[in-house]
Length: 198
Image (cartoon, rainbow, N blue to C red; front, side):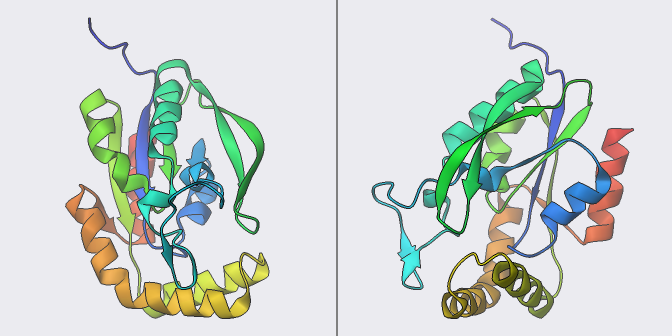
């Protein structure tokens, strides 16, 4: 049986933590979903660990099946329930309702967005897959300022984690590109996303 024709298509937007994904999504004004809301709770069994805490930068800390299910609902019905995730406590605190009805495309952004490229492409509703890149030191600084202002984790943990992520960023970006992302700067990402929304 043929799959239902998508009512919308998704732009998967990834990049290092602090690269500007969420800010760009807000500026563009398109419907968007924050895929980071699909993290597992801190007490989920078998979570990976690094830097003395749960490794929230590993896809194993993230519920890819539920994220894909939500995107499928959005492209076919225009609506889906999305978890509300509190990063400071590493727990889901409730649910929100996403509605992309009438939009030709919407953005799904997060550091694990690239993990969904193959499934979304095979299902026929992938519009684009982009990875935002910028100088590593700049990303490190913006990430640290954001995480400190939001009290995401203890300051020493944030510095240690941020330093490790900065060192590993080229490999991380190469992994996402290998999964099918196009590397772009913020301006290039904005232009491509706007073109899809016309």
